[in-house]
Image (cartoon, rainbow, N blue to C red; front, side, top):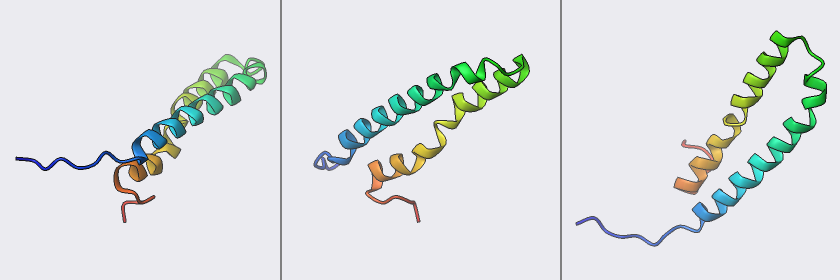
Length: 74
């Protein structure tokens, strides 16, 4: 039988931090939309692809902290 542990407070706090981060990131990208629309189409598509994927990279330490209580795996 698998022992049941107390739920961690880090997961709800981490989810709130994740939601706040996504909202802030979306507002920043949306505020840059006027400037991005002035770029040539190929650059604009590239910029949106990069911005659409780049938001994930800073979240790895948050997920590690939520699961382990440390900011890095080492």
